[in-house]
Image (cartoon, rainbow, N blue to C red; front, side, top):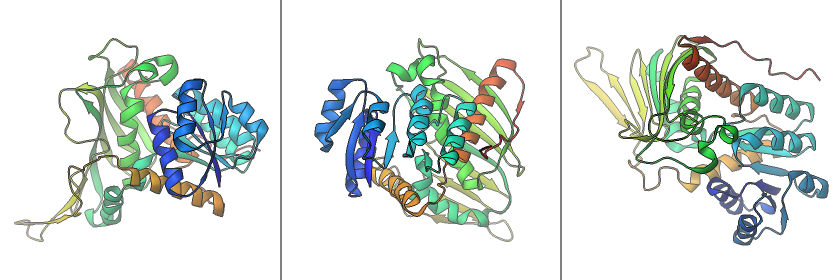
Length: 340
């Protein structure tokens, strides 16, 4: 498979290394910053460089593209690639809002191109360990999840509304949202209530958010996101699951099952080290890209694909609307099938 990359930042380098590890053909790179693009191309042995995605599309000889540019470019670059029949893996958040995400999804359907959203934690070994054990926890009553940076926050376009669309919630909170959705079996959100603010920096995006999500299966989830926080109760994507017959969590990863008379508990640890040497190891991204490639080669619809990405964007949109109004916001399913 011949693969291209839009963007040359930190996460794009991770994806390029994954492509190299998988033995793919790294064919081209797109970036408006020519110096950064030249360094990226040299590092990964990429022969073709373009400042515009339209020029890459015109030249052809590429099967798929990984889009890891600032958020405001996700929709236009994905739509251009998908319209040309290229398969796309786009970084999270999928777009600036749910309407853009829906348009991307419908274009992919119309052109029969694969669209996957890089919600990486669905491919993590700890997350998958707990996913297999979810039935033992019984009916899930509530969950908590975290997407937080302590004593640190990004700079540049991440902190600019016009380029990012949102701050810590879109950057980190979306990891917590998607992880719990995956563990719960991708339920639909009924409503979102949120408090969002900017308290730790001089920028026009959020650095603090608390959400309560009501799912259509009756579960309620509390999501915390932030940059520059003085403390966090768990690292990126850490999740706690409270069921009627047991408790489960990731990071540290374990289940706790009360005995019949409730006088003792049985704890099953995953056996994975915590904390990890690298919380986001390269193998996580290798597994994610391998899954994308497999979906392309076999004509399968990815999960997380456009439908999953749209729902996550609906939650983000509803959270901001709730914070503005002070009320819970109801969420109706968007039509995910193309009219074409």
